[in-house]
Length: 204
Image (cartoon, rainbow, N blue to C red):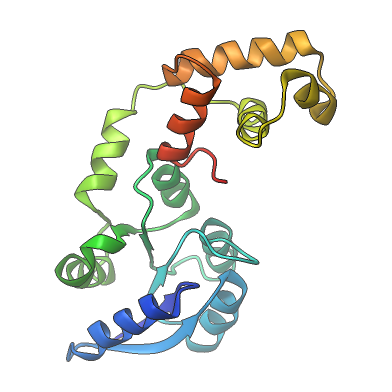
């Protein structure tokens, strides 16, 4: 029996997962969590074979929850179940220790196959997630400071305001922005924010 823990802040999605798991003879849903903190508590209690983890959640997001769970249980087998195919999100999840990545739109057949494959020791990526990673494999990644600048641009701050917030000169902010545009292949600030949101580099 593959015991499954479902972690998502949307009750309707958890209900869908519960119905799906409940229809399979070799699977059992042992718990449901609405955020990463609840997930860690329930993992400690049940130590399930498979955890289905959303990325965007209140209190503790999916990436942090994966790190917390695998910090205590290094063999935990966690599958990301998300609406976000962005390559940056996929890469962060895999680096944190996720063993599968499935988009919510692909639920039924692909999710069941992924659960069984990860339980058997394999890694599984949805075709969309794999395509996103392949498309940006050779890209030069943004530095943590450049991501900070981009987040503040997305929030509507001017170069001067960004400089004040990050203790940088306006010249340095402009330099970071020039680098960001080049790395993302963006034509301007707005285009850079759009690309970063799509790829999961930042979120609003």
